[in-house]
Length: 85
Image (cartoon, rainbow, N blue to C red; front, side, top):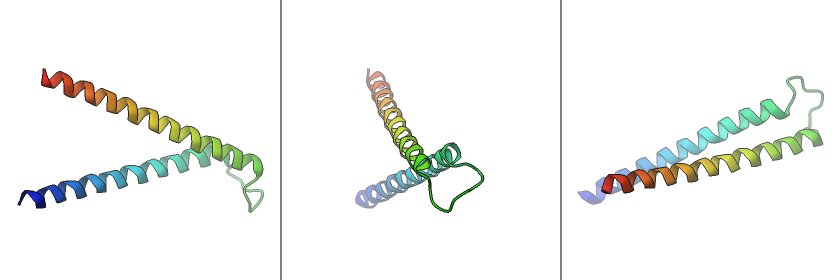
């Protein structure tokens, strides 16, 4: 019985992680598109300047996402240690 409960919990965690990653991808795509690609398309291909901008935007977005995740993890561990006291 507890094994089934554990499997359900694991599935829920996996589903939430997929949902969070999809949300991050969608926000990153929208933000970098808005920042790097002009609203009027002059060419059917991405220009070199646009590609460089997109690369930098994505790298920065992922870096910030990782930093926030680490900070939230640290805060969560501090909260847990305070609750144990």
